[in-house]
Length: 110
Length: 117
Image (cartoon, rainbow over all chains, first blue to last red; front, side, top):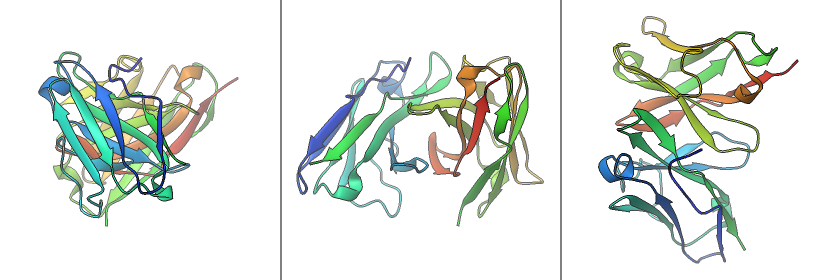
């Protein structure tokens, strides 16, 4: 059972914006950096956002991350069909000394 | 270019053992912590274990503690996961990933482990 909660699914039309929330606690999100991963169907996950809001090279600025208190948010603007994927948040849990992933959110482009 | 190639997966009976390997290239392997992450069929990501660059720090998920052992050989640019006392619930695709500041920045293609009689 994951300690980070995400909505099971979000959807929007092409060109629109979606946001994905990730809710945790003071022992994980509240005191550690959050990362976001994209997993396209049938492929390995890929790092989208690290240190709450930084993008690795090659990740378009349509993807953004933010954190406030014990929650984090991933935003995707200018939604494209190629963005249909599962998205996971992740962070270290200082109390449990484990890395935790969110429950995952499926993004559907209508 | 960073490359991570897992191997060693397969079909094993409950209670059996398996050793996964991850061959790394394209970066200075000895400078990075490494992670194992798994994904059961149709399920989400589950972190399994992490090892620091010099093997000084090792962490495990509760679900595998006492059964799995992570190790590395920096001279061979390789990461390992020894899995003992395997259970049906260990069935998953196992990914190795390079750790960069607490994030898994690069991932292998994964290797499938199936535990079934």
